[in-house]
Image: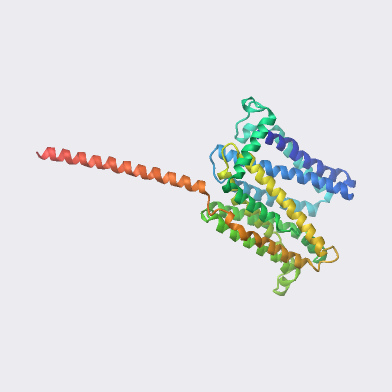
Length: 396
């Protein structure tokens, strides 16, 4: 599993992204023809999707090997910090450089990352390197079938299947209208794209803060209660776009630029943060030997649910007649988004109240502590009894 992931990271992910962004930078025709542009974006998104799958699997396997719980929180912190830096650099290059030069700089950065990945070995990941292609002399097909069988057994457990289906369904059923809202902000409100880019920076700052709070304080909150609150906040944040479309912010004295800067990326941030407790939960519950497969399946299912959400948003925009010259039905689409985001609360009982494995560990520790206290009482009691015997002998 790890060797396959290493090959994917080194040879496929960054190669696809370098190929896509390099074409946009070196061949002007690729950025002008719609089919070529769509092909480049497809290659880039494919590399990013494989990155998500491989990253989650490696993090989980490393945490299981070194017995580090909650490693996904630190991965989210690094992801948010990288998002802040990337959005800041992207905004700077967008102002100072033409688009082709910006694509070229991004391709150079990806090429450097590709070279670093090719030169890195599996030992630097802190994981054991597999000595042979397949352990115990099995064929590749038999090993794949065994991995699939173990994965299906793990997914069939209710403690894994129920929260997994909830998080996937909660993402897939909400139509994403971010493209329509972006066009409305730039074409109707005439907002500078740098303002929208800076709103992403603020969103990543919020994500970093939420992750730190979760890692230090919110882990003690029952998971079902936490996810319910986050889902309600996510649904409510979708209505902020409605306030911008209806110009409610102007009626209370908030300019469009300030409102978009502060609240445009809030819904996306909450949607990202909602995944973190489920990643920690499934990494804790997954059987030994199936860590990478289960987390890879989770990341793949989340990517697939995002695709369904995007198609659902495109279909909703087409059905409501939302076009570049007609945004009259955009408020209706936002209200449908809001109602769809509230629907998963109807079966939130699929989300566990807490993480059962961590409770078992705590109970085990308390039993050992009670046993230690009993042994201590026996030893101290025997010492006092021995003293009393010696004192009585001395008095005699």
